[in-house]
Length: 113
Length: 114
Image (cartoon, rainbow over all chains, first blue to last red; front, side):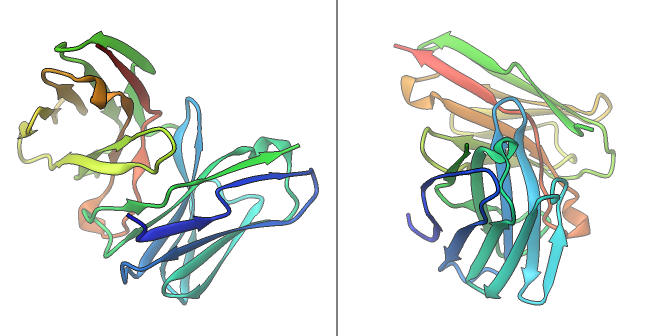
């Protein structure tokens, strides 16, 4: 289903370029997350937001920034992309924390040349 | 530091076999252990989850076994089917802490051959 959408789905960019990945959700959830997936490393949390005014760093936030424009929108920016940021990026939402299910978007495949 | 270690990285079984994926965690404060299933080109989706107050949970053909003293938990897929071919991630979080932060394992790519 399209409750969590991500744009673009694929992006190729060059080293040093600024790039923004966007996430929108229609689930009405307060909590939103950005993850990065790399082979052999699983999913690693970049940033998470409990609401529009509450944004927190995850385990690998260096080189990334985020913006929570509204309850439904959470954007991830790479200020100056580098090749080791080539990865699959996922946005997720949950109603609350703790044991609530996280609902993932379809992902953005980013390649930095 | 990887707080949740998952093995094996990949697994191939024949249809009807019982693949087993194992995870080990370090933080004894973790009290919620979900498994997520990811098909190619899709985002992960919750498959099944367990809390440490029980040793086993079944949902259809999927079973989680939990060993609190060993800090290990595993996913068993009974009568596996080609449609179960996917990547599986274990995860852990402090549910009672209400932060919602999930710590994921490295993932296991499962192929079920017809």
